[in-house]
Length: 186
Image (tube, rainbow, N blue to C red):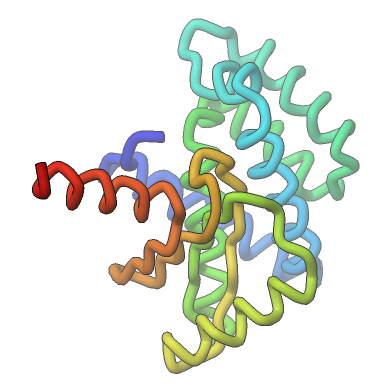
């Protein structure tokens, strides 16, 4: 996805803040985080869903029906479901990925954690996730909230972003570096 514009970023912050307030008032922050992870995984796994969410040519009513059907399929909590329906009705569904990111950042900030985005070539099990969380926390110097997604194009390894710092230990990058070095030999 392209980098969010300043206006989309501000929009995402406002919606994420409103969602955080609602979730906090209902003691549902962890549930909403879990639900938003499911939404992110669904978006990552479905080109059709990404197209529907980002298409300005699809009527808001149709987007609302579609995202509510997805929410029902994923078994999302009523608060998250209603929130997704609201942003679809208001024509803001295109910003859902930025809203999710802003929500995660807000939760991490409120908990005194740093947000780290991890892209893995394969799904991580609970033990690998815990080990990764510990390693990233040691690197960052504080507690970490991980946002993990899978990108098979990495071939193997991980890419970890903590703030403006990035650690790219992906096989794809290592192969690209090897290709560059081999071009210099010939």
